[in-house]
Amino acid sequence: MIEVRNLVKHYGPVKALQDVSFEVRPGEVVGLLGPNGAGKSTAMRIITGFLAPTSGSVLVDGVEVIDDPIACQSKIGYLPEGNPLYLDMRLREALRFVASTRGLRGEERGRAIGEAVKDAGLKGKEHQLIGSLSRGYRQRVGLAMALLHRPPILILDEPSSGLDPNQQIEMRRFLRALGHSRTVIFSSHILPEVEAVCDRVLIIHQGKLVADGSIEDVRRQGAKDPDADLPTLEEAFADLTGYTDFDSLHGAEVDEVAPAEMGGDQDVV
Amino acid sequence: MWSDTVAVYRKEIRAYFTSPIPYIFTALFALLMAWRFFFDDETAFFVFDKADMGRGFFFRLERYLIVLVPIVGMGQWSSEVGRGTIETLMTLPVRTSSLVLGKFLSAWTLILVCLLATLTIPITVSSLGDMDWGPVHGGYLGAFLFCGALLALSVWVSSLTRHQIVAFVLTLVAGIVFVGMYELADKVGSFFGPVFEQLSLASHYQSMGRGVIDLRDLAYFISFIAFFLYLNAQSVENRRYR
Image (cartoon, rainbow over all chains, first blue to last red; front, side, top):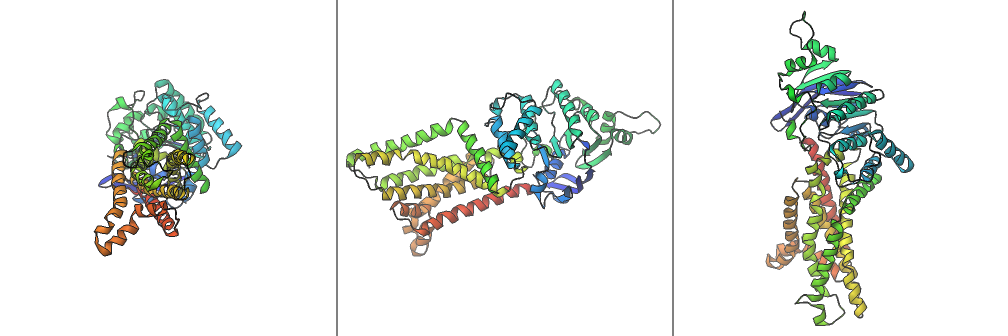
């Protein structure tokens, strides 16, 4: 479904991605893990066609993104980092806009908007300005926009960022439900979330893929002593990335993410 | 392609008119123009006591448009970049040309609304006496195209920076240059003079203000707009290669 081949991305002298390759099969739910600035968002931006890679390629259903971005983008629903939204638009208008660019018209569009509003739990908010909604609701708006055209592929950059613990649990449930019918790649800081939701984990560290496999596999990769008990995902993650600041990994209290900027300073190693 | 352009256009128009700012802005602009036209010292309408718009009106309009157009154009891309929504926009299955065209046409519509609001002035004048509408029609068409040209430049500049103020100042300066070339034309010698005159937005605008619609003026404005829209699409597309 998605093939990432030898992806390299440089921002000037900064090497954001160095030879990253992986493949995602249909129906898989893949968690993209890594410390801040590891290159997760860069990878997602290249898959969605927002950025062009320095070298390497991404294929969506066998089509290279750079060759036919429109064909690939129409199969993908994307929630960018920091969930940028048109705060000065009413929810319904914003959804109408996205639906129109997705080729939905007339009755079909009305139905799609209605379903997305219902699925994301936004009923009754259709006529509100997006800027007047709370953070949790805004996150739902971002999801509703990504889900509007029922895409076979969903790419979600930190979907739980800024949500309170209850909302995070809800998000977990939501991601798991999505996985039944769709291919999902999402990035996260929250290890328990990844453990609860994913079939497979990719760990990116300093622009390189350092682990790829089921949660079991990754824990095994992090094991120093083959006879001892398997380390937890957290320990394996620390071992693979040298990252020990676990307070920020437990989630719940995730700092507000700055609005995603072109080229992403926050993604720089 | 057209349906995407229309979608972008509608989105922009809806975003404008959800906020009260364009209404206030349009009203202020029309009031200011009317006040200057009827009560200004030099060309005061009531002093000359003649039912004529005169060249003064369109000449002054030009000065105000040099400021008005960059205000409308400055946020077109820079606000998308500032808020991060450029990422939403550029990952929708929409061609860059549709994005550029939709944004440009919606901003041009907003300016058209401002221009139409000043129609209260010629309507008032014609109600007071027998006015020649010919130059007024030409003048308005010229003003609309003049705005389109300046706007195309402005929207392009806005794609180069994430700071609206920077986009505003740069376009203001460019506007002054493109208009000022006309005034300089007779001072720069026999070779550059005609070049400056042909390149200047002001000469084509003012020639339309005489009430004569010359194809060369139309061709000038249309190619000016097309050129900057092309640059705009290029600079947006280049963002992917950062």
